[in-house]
Image (tube, rainbow, N blue to C red; front, side):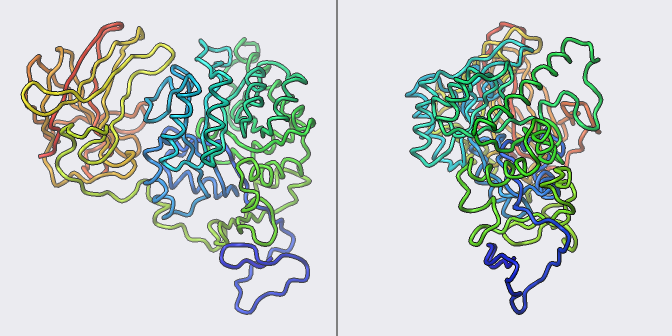
Length: 548
């Protein structure tokens, strides 16, 4: 094989080695197209949890194209800039849509996951999302919670059909979170491009298979995330525990339904839901589980390369080894079309013809970092005078409340002040769960991706009033570091100054690791939170938030 300018130029037994070419001798090895993982979450809560390290984990296992389902659209532009500095797979950033109180909307606001419940709402939401130039759209259409908790709401067929039609008009493919057979049939009827989870509530029937096949829908079963006992881990419950028996039963349905769809001619592609469990090795495990489901090793390899490329419309760019295609390549020791476990023995990985993993590759400084370089910002964070929902730093304000099917209802809006100008008003009715809360987040950089350097300032000044409930001012930084300060608002406006040395470092949400020391050059968000008793109504107003 000869590679020129990042693409395969020639391939075959009689191709001559061009003069001056860099030669990789691989006798006895297997050369594969780069693997795909069409369902991942590059979340700070994953293992690893930082962008460069997640990128490296995929390259080390031969994965050269992934779909990331985790990021809000506001973060797409800085994340693409970040990825351009890394040795990384190609990452497709995927915008999310759900129903009010649906899965994916039960923990996020609409700047993170759009909520729709009618065809017109779906069309408008797709148009709004398209302005951020996502690579794909993920729709949470199925509210079934695996029989383990109360169901979320589900998306109606007419809403989903309108969403798909509008997305296709923008040249965007749609993947769905679909986990029941009935919703799988509806996904096929709506002509969804990819079902991105296992149908696992019962064995699939002929009518559903026919609907999925007629819709031209691909199937990505994410078996690895549902494996009841993952490799190297202990069983979560004893074998005779009803919860363990339920997991085993659903996983059996998932395996059987993947094989039934494959045998019926529905194209099966590869995704894992990694990020919900460790990234490293997840894609290889998915290939092994497809073989366990009944595909041959060769069929599993095709699922993870050519079929996955076609599922997201990239079959003319990558996914097979032929002239003109992108030189995303993996060199492995073994014959994985005979023994699928050989995909784990990765020796070299190339992206766009450039070796990014294996012998002779030195890890880049950017891949060793855990964050983008810090940037300096102006003192004024927000005076709430813009009418477009953005701060004075040109970042998009975000709401955050306790999640779940019973969640706090929060309304945050800019309102006129009595004398002059405007302020931010937060009003909430708390959920019935213990320790409910509502928060307004002021990102210090676009999408809260780039850290900012506040070492030129001494603290934060702002005006505040509220209904006598304690308010927590929190700074959030890279690697989920947090510092906070509690204060007591009053019914009337007052100006508050909180110096940085008044902040207290907070342990991570998991309670792991030491309390972070304040450095001042790794901050990403300002958060104002108010808590209270279940069912209470609360209010808070802010103005003129600035560093001093």
